[in-house]
Length: 528
Image 1 (spheres, rainbow, N blue to C red):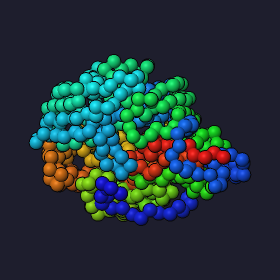
Image 2: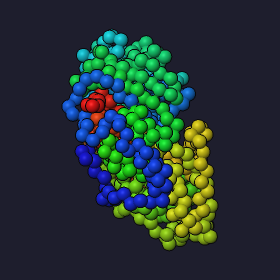
Image 3: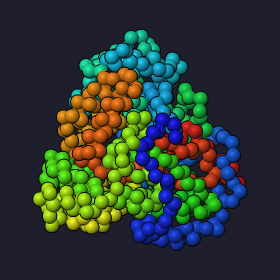
Image 4: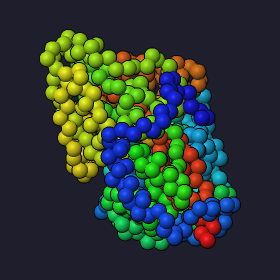
């Protein structure tokens, strides 16, 4: 894995059948059996072959609703992200190995103290309406993201941006109030979409490989090939259909009955079952995606560091990876950013029930305690993780009452729960800290405000020497490891499934499904 130096990784466990996974698998086993033997495209012997042009790829996923958007800068659910990646581009992007690469910019470089970054733009890029992209469009796009009256998702990483200036038609300067050695990382997020100065999300225009044909929120989106696309890698397809499904059973049913060609995010427990069907392929991507438990460090009982440590010691992490992820993942160590080159090798934290009990007794809970865990199906595996954690914590005298909510209710108040869950895709340390671990972070789920940690992160932001910055990051991670509010029990692989006649899908470390949703690289092979 390029650019990956995880400190403690365990061999991928093979797929022991467990209670949660088995129950789900059994529920669909009949469906698989019922579908076998049908005369459908993708039968034995049919493969994708070499890239060919033409055809429509039908992609299914669970989720979406009336709030679905065509505006890539505010993309949240899977459908939003798929539209964002395929209709728009950013200045930079993360490739399959999670390396930061040029996209609409040919380069972005800082000055000596990382207070000014200069972006040099490609000069051969056109929007889907045929107009050329210029530096003025880039400036307008960034100003749109940080609009104080309507900030978009990327605004969180640009709070220190004093001004963005078009130096000439192909050069843009980002001038900062304080140094930021990782500004390029933020500009490489898929939500940092570059759009025309007069962008209208009701009539969206972008530079991506596909453009809008039709959109029905919560149901379907049809994208067609952008005739002005600038890239060399595709698109091969004429169209993409993005189809919403209400639940996993309906999604898998659609795949097995060939109503769709590919599906995003299958339950880990079904990977072997689906993969055993010769018509199907499983796309298994190792990622830095994590599904933490979040303990509010400003709220009892989690404002006591001993309680937080006791909860961490109650977790059997290998069992979590086995039962929740069916072995498709790696063990975590209560730190994030496992793909960051500075991810440290601290001793692996393991389950220690007696020490957990001792810490709870010292904190004033000699007979254990009861907590409520807020959860919802926000990502594959979260609810299952809550159930497994409740069983494990009981051994330490911790009674966990699971409060399962629907998605709308959960997200409506999710930063306020004393004990809850979250999920994050692969990110390096500083972008992750900026988004979720500083007092001014928009998603500071644990209400973490450790002065020593804050000082180290601020110093790391201003450090342009890679080795020196890495040392600061390791010190900050040590504080997170010792007294933070996150239980990072593991990093989940991304699992997708597709018909064997689909070509061009490869493992991708970002955590986004189906090769990071870069569908311009995908083609439909021989269906005969």
